[in-house]
Length: 91
Image 1 (cartoon, rainbow, N blue to C red):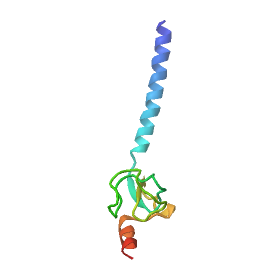
Image 2: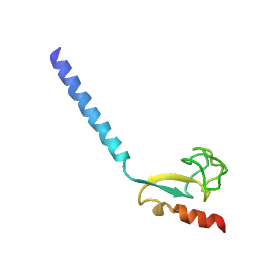
Image 3: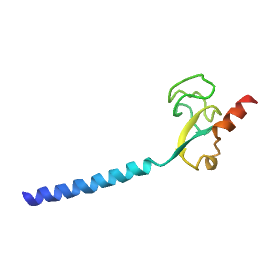
Image 4: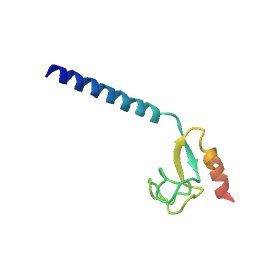
């Protein structure tokens, strides 16, 4: 029975380390990326103030809607910074 307990403990430790590694990877720096969000998939309030909660965007790719992405990836997704989104909304 002791051998089973040791093996179970070792397996639990390996699994815990794997989960800790995933949590560390998710803790990387993020940035707000505007204009890439599908309807209902925004992360929080929009720039225009028409809603204040996540998941309330009504249109796909709205310039005032944003989502967190890994830092440095927004431009490759054809997204905008907050300053760019505000400028686009003023037009």
